[in-house]
Length: 226
Image (cartoon, rainbow, N blue to C red; front, side, top):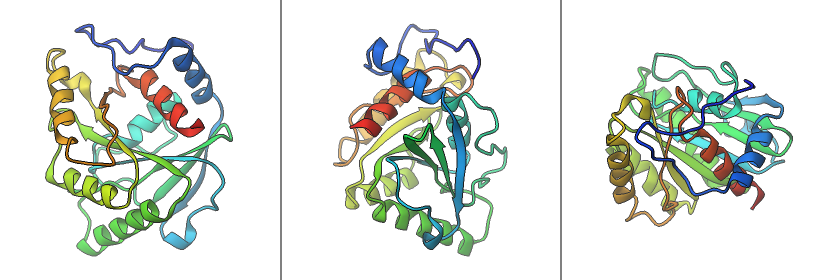
């Protein structure tokens, strides 16, 4: 972990989340601990044994899931990052300090693979989301530049049906003008109002600048300990 971290402050002065300084510091210490790759599951049968609370990261291909996992843990290469959509081709589990599994799900949407492969990934992710009793929350990542797409709404409907708690996390806010970040948050909040399993707060983040990372860590830590 680097000695100094961005303070998460957006140039326009907005600071995401409502966590206290104490909660943010406790989460920083948690995410500064050991974080190791545990398993990569390409089938439901190969999922690791249920052991710890789990927080999963889902989203369209190339939305920045792996980059966000790396930013949260302060490691550049923990999760594989690729410029090509569809780099994550299995469900990857990371053990965070023996207290929590971070779970990186395959992206959905425009990955340039065969239809049968897309269906295989979708079936695996769906089986995991429906059948994992230790899954505490899904962080559903949305590219802040493009907003909630039809495929995101479909995923949200499926999560609603499965009664899986999820929270929208906006990525790549560094590519927006500062004044556009609150607008992106408001648009995402409007999109979740009809979804019963969605957490009401939308968190804007940037893996590049660190904006919102401390607050997301605190949210994940609170969910895992709850």
